[in-house]
Length: 198
Image (cartoon, rainbow, N blue to C red):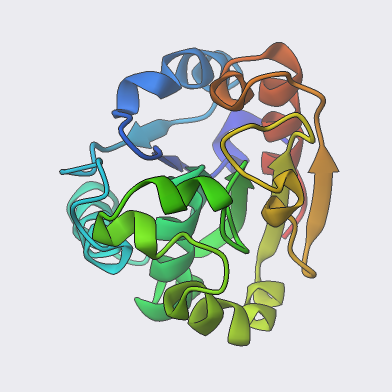
């Protein structure tokens, strides 16, 4: 697949992060021919519900990419859940061709109980927000979906929460949550997933 065939990529960061966390991934993907976009979700500390952050993502995509331009979407940690809401509830399914989540709490994380902020409450196991998304998770089969995760994750507890029953499930043995978006094994796994046929 040459660079003219590669979709633009949109990166969505996690809780308390900014798009700066994607600097190694952005450099890596650009070196291999991808055009990469990323935004700052504001605020990213859990004060906003994830559906409100997904609306920021929707607006960013509308302003950044030409209308109807297909693209690939990558969400890290909370950003994967924000991206799922965009795909499943805000029409992203019509434009996203490859969707990759990295260490995202699809089935919640026990660490979310450490905060009472609205966005964190939504990431607790069995939250009404996650249960609603998981009720029709099969719609993700309409695009090329990959979940990348590490069994050593101490932020996503249990780490297996990053698994979904759709798409590809790829385990990368990286020791720390934040390293998932900068470790060479993680970057190579992302690039391979972005080259998957749709």
